[in-house]
View (cartoon, rainbow, N blue to C red):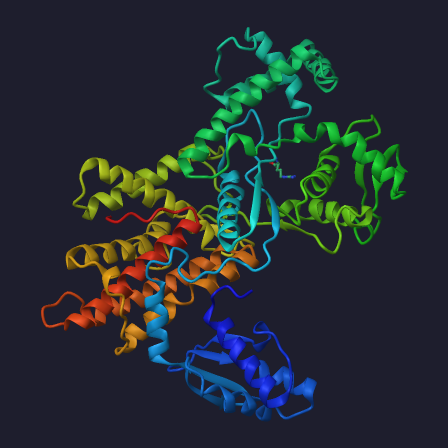
Length: 580
Ligand code: ARG
């Protein structure tokens, strides 16, 4: 790690004390330093218990060795043994103050890039062509985007890729429908209503025998690489991509057209991948289909579950493509870690793909492959959300609703002009949409509620954005340049608590990035903002009778709070306007 975290620094000191006192070697992380929940204690060291077992010594004796050598250090004010062998640590005020002051002007706010960067391939968003993005795409899109930002900021290399569903049987009917509508490639047509287009094709397919036959023949032509058919297919992909682009731009999502690696991209790799798996001797023919049976996967009857590589009719499916994704990103792009942000129902699909990839040696101990699953978004009635008419909610509508709801909140108390109000409403609305999602443990379902996500109190982006705007307003009113004299003095408990909270950003970024868990960053930001609120309520900054040096110090803390909130929200793809 070594990511600028105070806990890791303390861990290094504990390791030093143990080396000198008992002659044992541990890493800073093995010192198990955790923020303490006890009043008046900053951190707790939990290493003595487990070490005691290893060393065959009483835990308190190990704790004593830590304490004996630690309190001489500059950063520790007191270190005391508690209970069976915990060590309670209080940091020195002067050290905390200097450390906080040093963050001023530091773009990374103390977060050091990871020592050993990894190479991540990150599959996220991944909607299907010829359909509009709907509420079901919200989570894979914004969770993936936050993970991309987090991992990059942590210092890793990340290649995002958008696994568009752009291949398969529906394209036969879609292309035939295009032709019926008189389309030609380059004819300058555009589909204003993707869903309507899809539904019209579907209806014809279900009711018109001739159309259905033509559609099936068209699939064969498409898969056979017929030029004219491919040109029409490209029109469909292009039309859909334009729609996705628009939604991504509205939502502030980093994915670009060049990040598209749709199912069709892997086509040229499928036959070769299947042949390779056959050559490795891990395939079996079952019911006419070529399969791998990764051990440990069975159906309800206890029969082994097949990962189907080639169907009885010779066709390839979803499994085949995903085996090819693993082989491509590891083998051709030299990635170390594969991440797939896809809903929980596909957990078994990915578990089987990963297991088969390990059997084939595509994945080795040097690699990780992770399905980043997530729960469902529920309506306030506890069921999956739908429109009033019972349809699926379009993502673009959700975005405009969010902005409209936010506009009301903003207009209520804002002194901004109309243009600024609109900009702020976007930041607040889209922020709320993202934060309501990202602040929840992604594995769990969550309930979608405009009033809750736009509440000014509680763990919401609006609360964080208001706290940040308050900081900016104080700084503007002060008329001072905080960077000119970045001296911090911590005398009031609320000042000290705020400095301590600000210094925990590196730990929060690390925890969120390592577990692919943006909610850990959100929880931290909320804690930092509430700590700031207490500080703001109890420590006057601009009042006349505040001494100049105290004011200067408090302004530094205020500036740092705003920096931390802005950076943290940014890592979740959320803007932090100066004024609200
Ligand atoms: N398009 C798929 C769907 O809508 C998601 C694709 C996820 N990525 C993958 N490599 N399978 O369900």
